[in-house]
Image 1: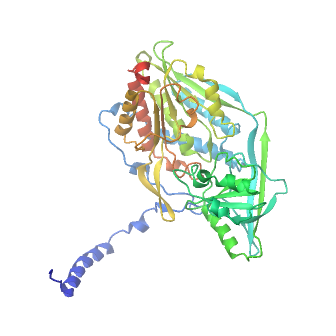
Image 2 (image 1 turned 120 degrees about the horizontal axis):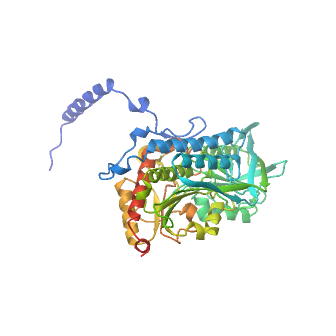
Image 3 (image 1 turned 180 degrees about the vertical axis):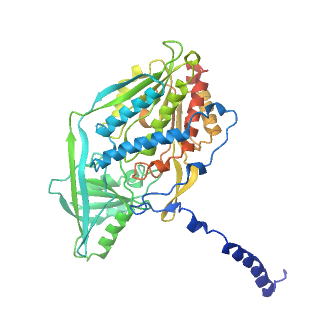
Length: 505
């Protein structure tokens, strides 16, 4: 039988431990008040998340790779900021639907800016390939308001899903009904016909991939007669989120969780015999005669007619689009700068850049343009790299908050080619400290229509901030930009010592 300790000894022991700790804290700094709060629910009041200093991010030393030190993360961060400024200027010009939107003045400004960056880096044959656009869906204005106790609340986080139909000029006043997650059982016994249906969606790997998409809730709501659909993305704060085309034929919007809570409160407090109505105003223009372009440029090899390596980076974005895809454009530009500094006599293969117009429109213009021009783009190509979402901070979720960290966010990846290509690619990612999924997978992105036609590499971060208004430049660490771009540079140089057959077999 174990002897029992006398309670007085426990008390003395506790006192000896506690008093020094308490005394030490008296003269210490409380980090909870002295340091910025990393875990915070983004909103208009907080202006997004608070990210740590660029100098604070974890960086992995990679001995033997000193040759790539000239690839500058701070310089690339500045390129990301310049692209964000283009998007912000378009917003400040009075455009509620904003970003680097295809076919608009922001699209043209981005193309001109990218060409100027290439010329300054010594890239040759810088040019534009003009691309006519089909009819473009361009929202002009929208407003969603709900009334409760004589007070009107505007849902400021509302953002139309791509391709969503508008209302008449008079708008629509619709009865509101909440059906939870939108599973089949949630609709049982609920009459949604002619009503505005509220669905609550759980983000999975990112905002774009979420539960209402996975379980078919949108299609279920429309089939049962919904007159409008509001998707409350259940992430902390009041994020604006841009979904791709969701395939509905009624006005469809994403809503932040704070605005979703307003709807919950109004519906809960309303009398059972008094329906709650929401006023939906949504004006959409369908514009013909617009055009866009792909930006092209080359760092030419020592010999003409040699094989080439092609780097693709799409230029368009929702909101600031700092990760998607200002980071990818910055990576592509820095790679061209790096290879342009190599004496021409030492260049084994031509390196070509293509700044495509992107896929954030119904026609997915970048996808189709790459496929339609695949023969000329891929002629003599031995490697295709998709520079897309190439940097991001790790953002985690804890309770009611999103939390920033001093680590780089994880990447999905796909490699088309030989085992040798896969081996050197993954080893190089590891050397430069790039966190990645253990298994291959994830989206292929802009090169999806041509990725299987030649050896190709895709590395993408698609986290919880994707396609939101807080995917800002602050979320893009210079260390992450440097790691990815240095890795790509080393991969290209290793590939230059391999034949096409070694890359494919």
